[in-house]
Image 1 (tube, rainbow, N blue to C red):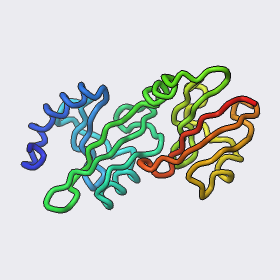
Image 2 (image 1 turned 60 degrees about the vertical axis):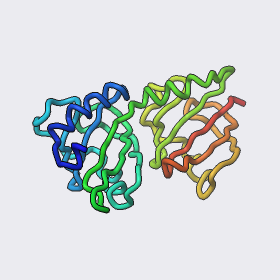
Image 3 (image 1 turned 135 degrees about the horizontal axis):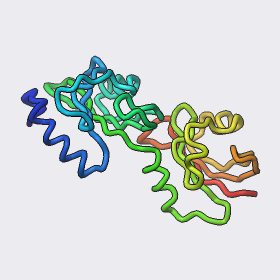
Length: 192
């Protein structure tokens, strides 16, 4: 209701509670790409424009949630993935709610799958950049996938492949494109 009334100051308290419950900050970003509030800064603090302009534009144009590629957060100044949810008022998108997700959180989810014996899982964004990895995540964060991978997966939703990993050894892997994050791919690999 506070957003419906354009009461950002009133919404800020609500957003801080949501941020605490989610374990990640919450931001409101206007269609002009300007951040209106960010729960990591006191209300009224001048904020930079968003670090995820493409994701904001996509959410405002389609009226659907979207996910950014890996980026350096404009406020947090650390690697994040921004989850964007449009705020629709009167049939049009007025703003976007954003919650940055740390790559470490995603790597933790992959690691919790308990892969062992040389197997590992990865998550890559639409730019074919490593966003999360079940093992040695810090070593691979932000690195592009091996050169052979984009060509081998082009136009495919899922499949099995063989190739050389970024760590320098041969693997067999299963991959799947994510419907909820266009261009993103999850893969599980086993050393040959």
